[in-house]
Length: 396
Ligand SMILES: Cc1cc2nc3c(=O)[nH]c(=O)nc-3n(C[C@H](O)[C@H](O)[C@H](O)COP(=O)(O)OP(=O)(O)OC[C@H]3O[C@@H](n4cnc5c(N)ncnc54)[C@H](O)[C@@H]3O)c2cc1C
Figure 1 (cartoon, rainbow, N blue to C red):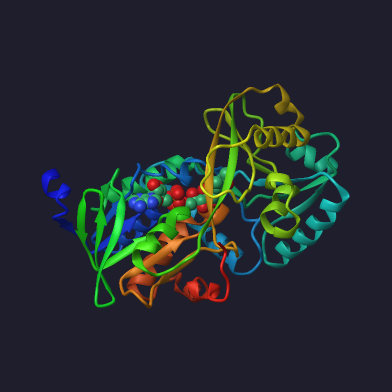
Figure 2: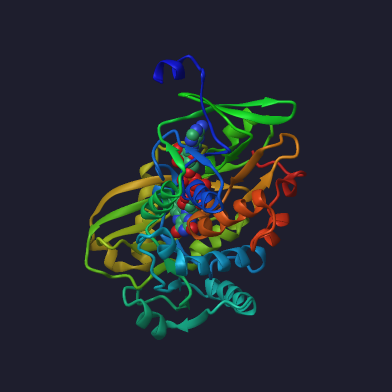
């Protein structure tokens, strides 16, 4: 087969080809196969090897903007309740709650309004005073002035999540080809006819671009322009320590860095803190537009560590063993694009989840399934996730 593949001879065919096997592509492959579709999924690396393994583990509800963003996140969060059973394996999902620490009076004003809006939107979130905040997260600095807390926030192991979706998809018949790069899209008469890969051509009439921050390069092959920009994030990983964090912890500066584009702290720094089952701490993080540059200046690492130690002084004595760099797929409005192209029939886009792809992965599989099959419980969201909302704007 490899000789034919090198010669670029058609190697195989599939009803649907998913390009990209991160949390988004694997979730899509799983739901499509579950609905009876014949799916092939390819990735130029391994399963979950890009952004989906260089990120935090939080499924935060209280950090989402009320409205569509929140509605999607809430529905996706509910799907997590039964996901492990559906996948037939653990993804280390825990409904352990989430805390947002508040350090300054200015942050308190911002968070009071934020919590008020979240409560109005039906989120179970409350504002804690300093004593209550310290009871909830004893590791917080003595000079924090309060926190917000939601029992509905949760966490998951992102590595296990991509693997879990992929294993379940495989069980349902999805063929997965790793180390297979998409290098072109074949078209005829305004329709997709195949995907050119580094190992040959896959004939198909439907291709799904689930390449996260790399989606724009696939879009270039398709001739259907789109704009997803990489927003770099860096996380420090600590040595294994006894459990010190209850659920997930953010600080108000993180919420501001996420939502207030005009008032970014230097390097977009805000605290995110989570702990894996094996005891390592994930200490984040930054938000920067530097293209796909993976070379992180030591100033950024220092800034993350300095800020984290200010909010959680106990981190000062914990050793950092490595750092990781990921690229959030940024669309500009915090929402993904889940859409079919009108210019090129059979070309579907499912990318752009920015800093919420882990939280939104369960619902994204269902959204794409409902887009392709028609009807379905999530189809009401689809008209709001099309790419025409950016027609008047360019990000790059
Ligand atoms: C620092 C950081 C912290 C984060 N924290 C959280 C969090 O706490 N909670 C949360 O919900 N989200 C979080 N996110 C966001 C989340 O990680 C992303 O939204 C999500 O992982 C995107 O998944 P994806 O599958 O779209 O992209 P990816 O995981 O990047 O997958 C895309 C895949 O496409 C493949 N690919 C690219 N080009 C090609 C090609 N030409 N041919 C074949 N394959 C190709 C890549 O190899 C890759 O595997 C964080 C992100 C970062 C960077």
